[in-house]
Length: 175
Image (tube, rainbow, N blue to C red):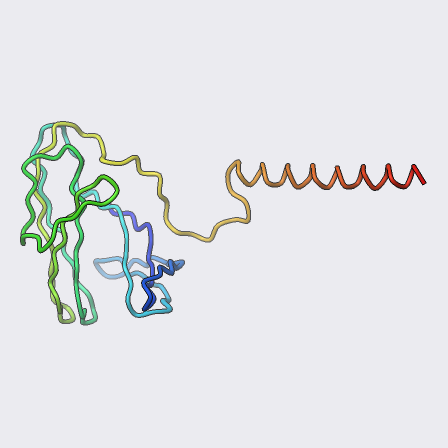
């Protein structure tokens, strides 16, 4: 299973401009339809190629194929927490820590159109629990207010309006 969570354009200054997107089924694959304000971009998604069992060896290959030439292809892999014997093929060009996780960067450089590049990930893990509690959802057009924070904001606004109304009424009665 793969779940696309964000598609963001990167400005020359490094700012992220995440965009609404549409996934369209096509012959043998799914196409991403998105309009980007800048040509540099990144795609963030959750990829779960198998249902893991505790203590089992896990291995998968993630292919990357683009209909267009790619100037610089980088793949960043977050190492699962509590993973043992974690390996990548091809090997990493850089390993770094961020937000309590270890990331492995593979840099391919130029990738011509219609070529397949990718990474094979192999590791063992004693439990079937995810590294993080997945609370992200696809970037979709949101309503004006969502969740309880929106309800609280509306309630505070109504209370403020009622307070102004009572204060004006009292001022008029005192004249």
